[in-house]
Length: 360
Image 1: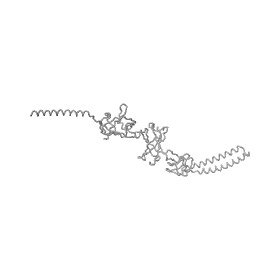
Image 2 (image 1 turned 180 degrees about the vertical axis):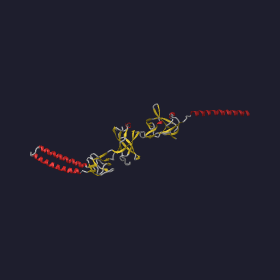
Image 3 (image 1 turned 30 degrees about the horizontal axis):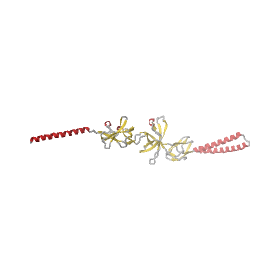
Image 4 (image 1 turned 120 degrees about the vertical axis):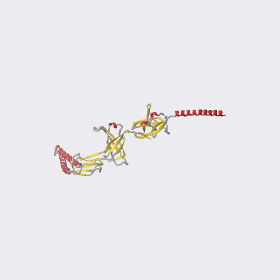
């Protein structure tokens, strides 16, 4: 009886050993077949401005700016406007002392009347052959000379009133009552506030890509938190001989909700030589080239596996690549350890990519 129990015990031990061995082998095979997860960082496809841009500073000026000068020398009797005043076309801005010309005009008018009488008498006598044709021509010449003298003196009197050539704002007043001025001496500067422009100089290297009508962004130092709109009005054809820069004229577009802009404000104009606004982009590190084709490794919904996705890449600037096709905004892609990835690779997200380092 005792021997039978021992045999039965040994059989049970042997059976237990046989059952345990297959289970151990199964665990070992399962561990060998499991694919290890590859640690990566991720980035999200976002819209960015990848324009090739540069900024140039220059002052705001009026497109129409006129120097009002005197066309007559003399003493200034009256000055009616000063800086900041608005003048309408034809307004008298100043008057000169023209009393001497008035006296000369009276004398010239008397001479004209006398010359007219002489000519009329001579014409009557010529018809009766009482005077020669030469005498008639002399009388006519004296009449025309007297008429021109009167017209000249009337013109001098007109020049004695300095009038505004256009409706504008006075930006500079350079004379006072009692000043003596000469012919062509500047008295006022007036500027039309309805059209303001900026004329910065641009290097020939940055000129490519700029064209008339192209929109630009403008910032004024006086309003640092505001952005103004403008357009390229024209590009001057010749380079400045001293600076070797081309002048690009930018028109400042007036907007009702914007504050007042005055000539003289310092403006900073942002030009975009290659416009790339609102494009879908990813970090350049996310793009992998294989067999002359660009790919991104796109994460699945569970973010535990990636799919190799072919994309079309545009420009690459400032560490980002423009994606023309292949993914949509918001797509999450692998941004590191790409050499270890293949289509369908298992992954483990350990952080989020950023331009300088990683954000965990």
